[in-house]
Image (tube, one colour):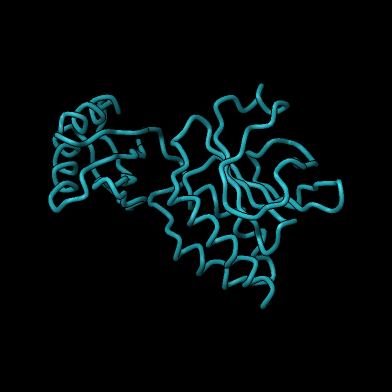
Length: 216
């Protein structure tokens, strides 16, 4: 069973090795690791994709990590996006292969790139906001949220009231795609928290997708 752990740890040599050893002793087999954020307080946040041996529950992996000095598991869940983590460079490579559809392609890639549940692309025209493209798990809506515009920076977004019943506990983030009237959004149900580093990555990838589409 694949799981994804988001772990906070001291940003010093040897920390990741101690985490990996603890996971192995608890019955987990690490498949991939991505550094999500380096913090000014001397800590880092890593995403760890792992498989568990039969009979091993994720709670035992969390306990093993939390017993290490300075280490804290921020979030854990099953990971259904395939056998590996999908990095930003891979997303950019995918966009360049189909530049004419790059704006929609980045939406399709966001769930695996940001370990999210769904994504959508919105366009404002006057007082109207239209959903131009969305992944299958996104809310079944044909309109967007006027309060999210103008889209100037990558930001965390408030969950609309009319989505609460189906998406309670969902965390949203969005970034402009080319101009302030177009926005790309991804969502996570229940976590983990969207970090500042992820907002920066989101802004970068959205801008790249718009640039690649314009060039195509």
